[in-house]
Amino acid sequence: MDKSVQTEIEAAVFRRLITHLDEHKDVQNIELMILADFCRNCLAKWYSKAAEERGEEVDYDEARRVVYKMPYSEWKEKHQLPATEEQLAAFNAKQEAKKA
Figure 1 (cartoon, helix red, strand yellow):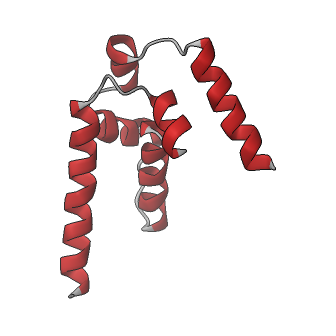
Figure 2 (cartoon, rainbow, N blue to C red):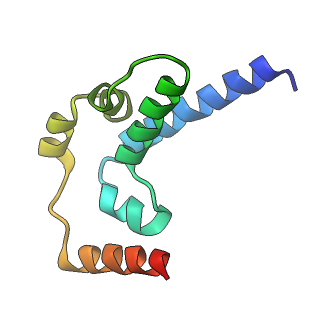
């Protein structure tokens, strides 16, 4: 496969992932962290880092706007629920298991 075609496909997959996450706002970031060890914020950090590696400046807030399709503060206010005791316990257990 031509490298430019591969890059176009990968970009399309990234855009589809962002759309999928946007269509499933009910899936909380902590749930993603527990199950998959990444969340929307991780994607924003990776986006910002990838831009930096290519000589572009995309700060974390700009990257979050790409991932959340709105300012993070707005998304958080509209869609983020407080983490439950069970979610926090599962998240902390996952973090401890990674240290072992």
